[in-house]
Length: 473
Image (cartoon, rainbow, N blue to C red; front, side):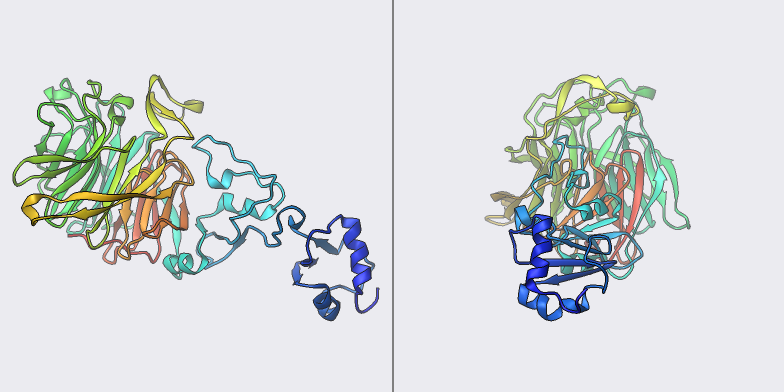
């Protein structure tokens, strides 16, 4: 073969390959990839890229990487970052080869998208982290990120993870089977950590959200039953636990005589007001003996006066809730694609350990909303929400539990999907953590708050990275 390629010679091969739609040329020689922006550049530099062998497709592959139909010449995904985890950067997600397809089933993740004309997309299936913004994503991962499943748990929903710094322990709840009265606790003072059950006094039926404030754990409790073991009777509401003594007290269990449907998640503001979402999942999970009585909504509760006020009523299924670091913005997730059904099922392959009545609709809402928090006339007037705006539509499952990092990034569990989305305050997807089990909620732990725990159906996973949580107060 001649030492230098002529435009005519390459043009002939290009014609044989059936590629005419772009002037960008890609030559792959063995393991090396050579990209030329013009025929002139190829004529000038191509000799160094092409082996001195017969001009055939065995050692030398000339292709346009989908350029004939989309204009793209770059692979969608590529391995990147430190080697302590399998990190895949998604550098070209805006345009896929037109042959792509994705099953609308909400349980099918982003990596489950079929992209037959770009083999690089298959790298995502085994990724620990997906990075969608290379600069900011690798920065938040830090020099040695890791993802590790630490515990196997039942195939039921696990929620309400909360870190108690004085004890260096992580508490969380197991939503089922019906009648379960024990919480779970991870002891982080030993290596490896240990997992054990934990009973409060009196026992608490089905906490689903948790926040740590002023030395106490505040629970949003969705269990609703007056015929529980040992004569326990409980209506859903807000409870406060002293982790040192194990004693729990009910702070709220009704809205002026109406039973709440099932308080889902909780956040405490700087003034000690408790903000919580109320959804009907407890009924769908057979954890309530009473059908919903009032609308699904978000409330603010002031323990000092007992006043409870509705603050948001427009979401289909209000779920996760969290404040920005300055307290001026409240974020609420809407898992509207999940709804209470009429038929109980264990899911495909009897996935769940007990039947649930939850249906899924791909076209329904799966969004995160932001609101400005306004306090007119001082604290006594009570803060309220204005300027509702949608900031994110989940790429997998539905946004469930939500936390906000020290730098203001949103960290949203994907519910029935196996992962966690990391977003800018404005909702740009920066990175995604991939777990091996569905993730309902997350919580940071450790002195530097750079260990993130993911809890969900079938597993508890630990993530080590550089993204720090907000200080625990």
